[in-house]
Image (cartoon, rainbow, N blue to C red; front, side):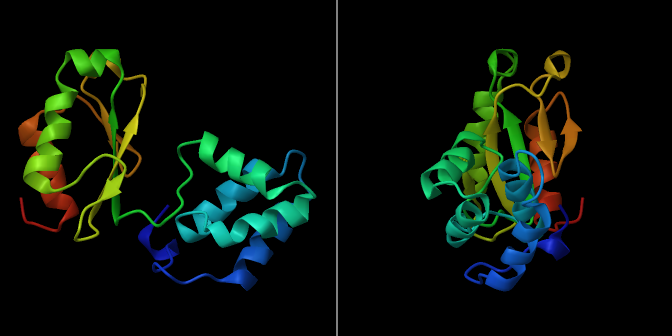
Length: 165
């Protein structure tokens, strides 16, 4: 997802939401495609879209909410301009990812599951990126990063915040 497709926080576009839902509601097993399309269009799935999806698919709001809460790639609010997904699985833990998480929180003010105060970076935990041989592993805006260390982490944060390397 690129920055241009994201909607500013607080704005809910019901007309556009209904268009996205209508475009996908005829698909087999349409709930996931609709939710992915909403997230792609807006950068998150607004809670005000849940009844629209439920109504279009003739399912309960609880079912839609259950799908959103089950899959951790769905967001309930907009992400920062950049998304860093840090692998927290065993191989990455053994190679020091916990120290990197602490560094992000203490030095850069970014905690897991949150967006930095400046809106530059959202930090998400993931459990196994399949890049164990290069652990600690991460994804920055969908691009894999291996052998992450403090220096590389600080450079990623600086790039996300627009600092010159």
